[in-house]
Image 1 (cartoon, rainbow, N blue to C red):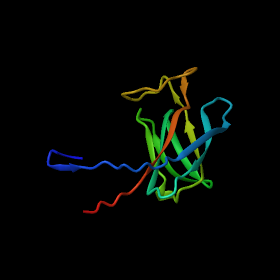
Image 2: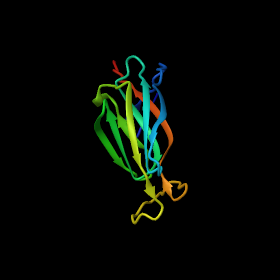
Image 3: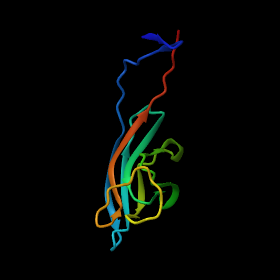
Amino acid sequence: MKQEAGFAVYESLAKYPSANVEYKLLKEAADSKIKLYEFSLEYPAGAGDCFLQIDFGGDTAKVYIEGEQVDDWFYTGQTWEIGLKRYGFPDKLQIEIEALEENAERYLEKWPVFQNGIACEINQVTAEAEYVYTLKK
């Protein structure tokens, strides 16, 4: 397309399908301080990787595949991105979120939204497929 700062810029004209993700709440502790969600994923053919992006409020989150914990994350205010290729593109996985209390003694640049003094909620989820291109002269 063009040269920019000494680099050639290419644009793909091919349109590739995106991944699909749906989730539902499976369990919630009586005090609402732990929630377990189940995710169902569909991957497009030919995807090199797929990234699950989770915007949540809480203290920590854990990923389980077939009952085994495979990943975790501490809330930072940033979207949590999980590469699913390294887990063999699972069709289902669970994410457990532990609540962050409003009076927790910690430094965060961006605090989550609190309801009744706690944050323990998924705000938004997307799944983005990644494709590999081979450029030929």
